[in-house]
Image 1 (cartoon, one colour):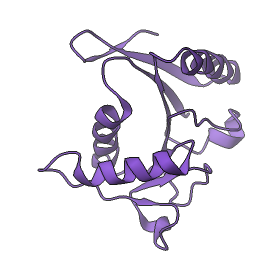
Image 2 (cartoon, one colour):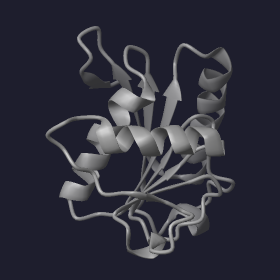
Image 3 (cartoon, helix red, strand yellow):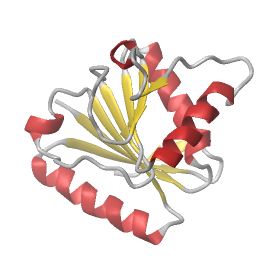
Image 4 (cartoon, one colour):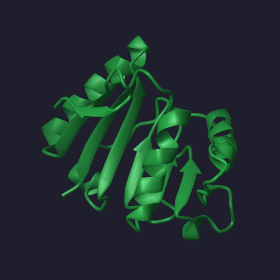
Length: 154
């Protein structure tokens, strides 16, 4: 069954957290789709993923790439799973249009990242948490500790 993970970002931003999560996803042999809310955020994250660490290479493309279907990490704004991703990451206000088992059931994981310093984003995460739980998914909530480590809170 699909796991739904909520990541409450407080001490580090998306650009700090997401690359490591994507690396772990690719190391498992899974493909990832990253859904963002605007083309501007997509472009910024695309640029960042090429340069986030000198000793690392994270192969990825945007959904406009003609080889989108073969990419291990794909960035998009419309939520279409063009690369048959096992894991879908939602960030910057993007969220599944449908939290049902029919829509999300084929995935290994859905990861919802939200900025805990933004009241609207936190409220949206609470609402999505309730939707995911009501659908019967296995859901976990992760929050950054003072040292930056992830702690399971629920």
